[in-house]
Amino acid sequence: MNPLLSRLQPYPFERLRQLFAGVTPNPAFAPISLGIGEPRHPTPPFILEALSGSFATLAGYPPTAGDLKLRQSFTGWLQRRYGLSLDAATQVLPVNGSREALFALTQTVIDPTRGAPGERPYVLCPNPFYQIYEGAALLAGAEPYYVPSDPTRNFAVDWDSVPEAVWQRTQLIFVCSPGNPTGAVMPIEEWKKLFALSEQYGFVIASDECYSEIYFRDEPPLGGLEAAAKLGNPAFRRLISLTSLSKRSNVPGMRSGFVAGDADIIKAFLLYRTYHGSAMSGTVAAASIAAWGDEAHVVANRAAYREKFAAVTPLLAEVLDVRLPDAAFYLWAGVPEAFGGDDAAFARELYGQYNVTVLPGSYLAREAHGANPGRGRVRMALVAETAECLEAAGRIVRFVRGPRAG
Image 1 (cartoon, rainbow, N blue to C red):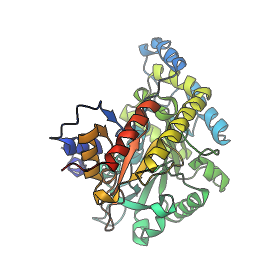
Image 2 (image 1 turned 180 degrees about the horizontal axis):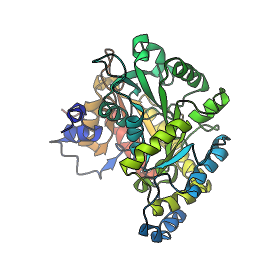
Image 3 (image 1 turned 60 degrees about the vertical axis):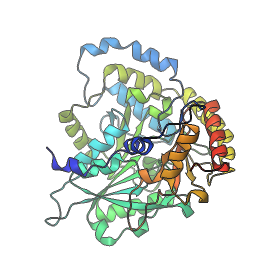
Image 4 (image 1 turned 90 degrees about the vertical axis):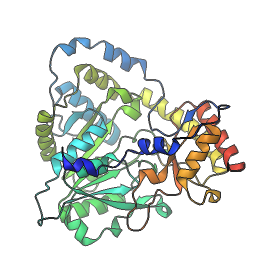
């Protein structure tokens, strides 16, 4: 067996299952889960119709690169959303969701043989982070380096804390904007810093942007490719953006997205994917073309999230350290002092007393540089309909204000 598999850590939801072992939730309350970031708004009917109307494509093998019409749906959306003009033949590729693409891109980029003997290359990621970043790095033969987010600066990643020796061995960095779990959006000044560092040290930037269409400010979040174009890098050197339809169009089960950016990296990525066997089904491609071509359902989806967050956030803010994020569909809430900063205890007791599931923030981060930056927080995914989220919020308020069990 691949010895690197032994370095993988349990996924947060497995740790949550272990945390809840032996706990019988109060039967007076129906279960409500705010733990998993799985979109639960209805899938738009026109996407389902496009999917069911393309079954004839199952008779043939789909091309790994996708057909031209599919790739043009990506470049068309990038033009409308960011004002960018990309070459559909060389600068975009379909992927089976962003998770698959994040992992596969890492295997394409990392060269574990480069550098001094016994020194693994570094892959940098924010801390807290999406665990695929870590697993992809480890299985590529690299070493994850966790860069803390600073809550005093809207959870901006503290890139200045990275030592020179680490930068010299860095081959890839992951950025996530809007962020999971914090919902923070990277400003252009931070992009400028990263591009300068990439020029100096030669690493690739993978920009995870799957939450870009769920936002709460008037101005949509800045994208990595958009920032590069504004900062004088129209060829997107050493930059790949990854996005998907899961959150934007409420189709997480369809596993559809795309990557875009540096044509040289895209070429190598296509070669990897040809052997990896990751072609997008023709049925999914047809539905994807329909989804990327329509914005009305995205506007309606965003409005639903805005209405929900406007109702739920002030209620929770009465008892938790929480505020409206820049974007995404999570609340990143501080645990009350009565729990001593123990996010796991908070989640376990809430589940037992009120049958509401939240995810301990420490499960989404790693102990690094003397601290776990997720400790003392919980992530709440407001993915259900407003009424269910309000019910959960009401229970959380009663839980925090009431006596603690035991």
